Image (cartoon, rainbow, N blue to C red; front, top):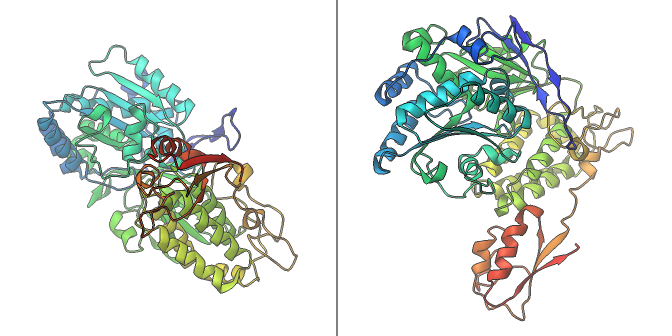
Length: 529
């Protein structure tokens, strides 16, 4: 066991949870976190002293290295990095030799801190990997998207420490929300747009940053590439599972970042952090899967082993649920937060996720079997219908919780409860809206003591505006349904189904566009509820 740095927090002027500066630890000798046992941050000199200078590799050599090491993206999907490189090279040929490189340093989920740790403590390792790829591709620019001010400062300081660069590198601070890291949302933000998912299947290898074929991967992936370039394929394969070599970064309990060889038992990682599986372990974060204690005790950290439990490591979040908190209440709390993290551009997010969170809250408040059935119906209503994967991932998280804790949800739904408080061990931002109820006996629902959790009883704040259709003017052009997708649906006759719709703040810009472009001037925005 290696402890590398203490956990601290830094003050934020904004309301809500102060951003955690993660503690660091390693199972065995670290690679990505090497050198951080004796210093808080590796500046350029310390970085070169510890790691040495990286080699220059041609595009074909870089593809071969990625293939020989079996390197996969570490941001969630686990896509083979060699295939990404090859796709960008093909796109580059069709784009007159032009390309770009993007580093996804946004971690919109509070339970993920591994990329934050790299960019705060070892930013030069990430820059090495990004510049290695940029030189091989002949990229015009490297853009690094982040969502924390302290991370942006660290990256900009590292760029300045390097002096003049042959490839321009910039770090851009983007809006902090869950969907910022989605590929099209990230490139849209880096292109000075609103940072929203496009709603279309756009491959970054064909069109990304500034419209160019773009190599887009997450922070850890570029750091792993930099390590692999120095070690070579054989050296890289000396640690970890033979079918999936190397190390992986994990964020445990939203506080500690652990580097471990692939194939290590999950129980060993938890023990390193002084934890056990508790009531279960959420793997892969809030789009992930719950492992019951028995599975968590035997699981090893490889793609194949986790797939046997229906789980993926995703962005490396590991969230054990201790015995003293209410699983049902914790799930409601996260569901409400996920609903609030909507990009605000499609119906399944804007309307479906709040309705799903409300239905879950009603079930946990003693709503009976009918309320539980309503939760499942709401999940089906949002699946495979979103502009991005956020509705699907949220529904998957709730479905996994229902499957992992069936007796808890059944007990709450039928007014029995569990008598435990909601401690808020699953981290979310905006504690004033989604905070834990620490009073004994709240437990996310009704109990013998008569307490009711504030989560279950408090609905989201109502929207302050509504979008209205004036039937005396509407001529059924249908343009509004295209401009405000999800909010306005057309009936069988081609006219909007409803005359009044709640208008979330995030949809206001699109709604204003629909009002201006309605040929019949039949739309208007009305203040008040």
